[in-house]
Length: 213
Ligand code: CO
Image 1: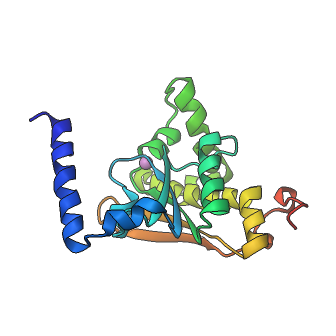
Image 2: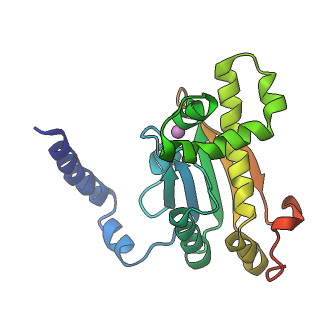
Image 3: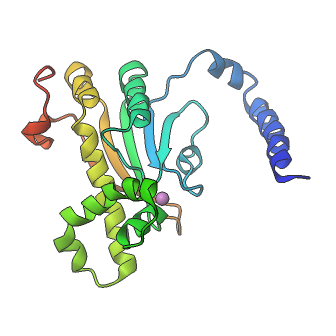
C-alpha cells in the first residue's frame, strides 16, 4: 500500500477507536472549539503538540514554524495569535522549542542557506548575539546549542509580551499567561524555562502601548 493511503486507513481506525471511548466525541467538537491553550512550536515532525501533552483534538490551538520564532512582522503567526487570544480567549500561550533543533543548529553555523532561510534564522542569530557572553563560555557545541534553544524560547516568549494583542488581553482579562518550554527528543520530557504572569513590568517601557496601559 502506498504510504499516503496508509494514513487514510489509519485515520479510519483512529476515528472508530475515538468513538468507542466516547460516541459523541466528534459531534461535540463539530460545533465549536474552546481550547485553553495556544501552542507556538517548532515544525519538527518529532514534537507534535497533542501527542507530547497527552491531549486530544480540541485542547490546543496550534501554530508551528521552524525553530518556534515569534517574528513581529509574521502575518501568519499574528493572525493565529490574535484569533486565539482575542476570540478564543486562551488562558495560556506556550512557546515550545526542543533540544536538537535543526533550525537552532543552522543558525549557530555560518552556512549560507540561501536568502529565505537566512532571513528566518536571523532571529536566532540575534538571540545568540544578545547572549554571546554566556554562550561563548560553554565549550561543548552540543551544550551550547542546548542553551541557545532555551534562550531562544525565553526570548520568543518575551517577544509575545511586546505585542498589543497580549497587552490588551492582560489589561482586559488578566490573561493569558505565557510559558516557554523545551522538549527533550531523547526523553520526551517538557522542561519549563520561563513562566510569565500578566505583568507590564516584564516589558521594557518602549514596547508598552499607551492605549492599553
Ligand atoms: Co526544531
